[in-house]
Amino acid sequence: MIGSAPVQLRRLDGPAGPLHTSHMDGTHRLHLWRVLDLPVLYAWVEATALPRRLTPNAVCGDGAGRGASEQVARIWAGLHNKGLLHGDLTHPGESYGTLELHTVPALWLLYPPALAAAYGRRYAEVYPGAWEHTGIPADVFTTAETWSAWAAG
Image (cartoon, rainbow, N blue to C red; front, side, top):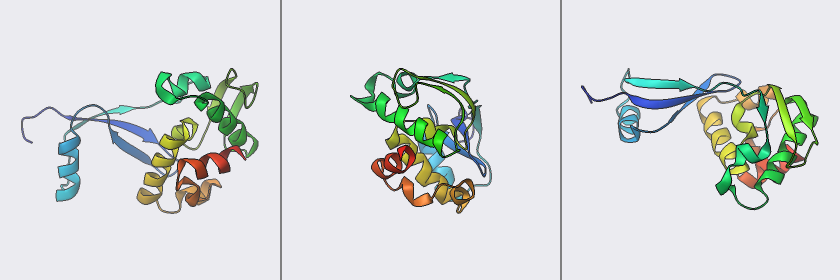
């Protein structure tokens, strides 16, 4: 690993600390670093910033599948109603609405359910008890369906 380019990571902030995900290159080196429990990793870290304005279509992208934008819009409305998402929602629960984002415990909570649940499960492993401090039960991240049902409800 000496002399190679840095591993490219993306930093995703959460309520108790960040998650780092492999961004483009270096998955094998990152895995080896974890397995060998090495003290340092040569990495380039890209921090994510909270965007100011979001739409469900922009978050879901083209390959998200039919109905994904509507599902994300319902989740945003549910999180807003629960007091976890702070911002201005135009047309809450509708895919054509917009979100002027102020704060959210973790940006990935706004992602499509499969991705949000995967990040939520991993976050619970890295930071045990962190979700409960935000008012979100950790077990809602078991599947995309359980996350979606709890968040939109």
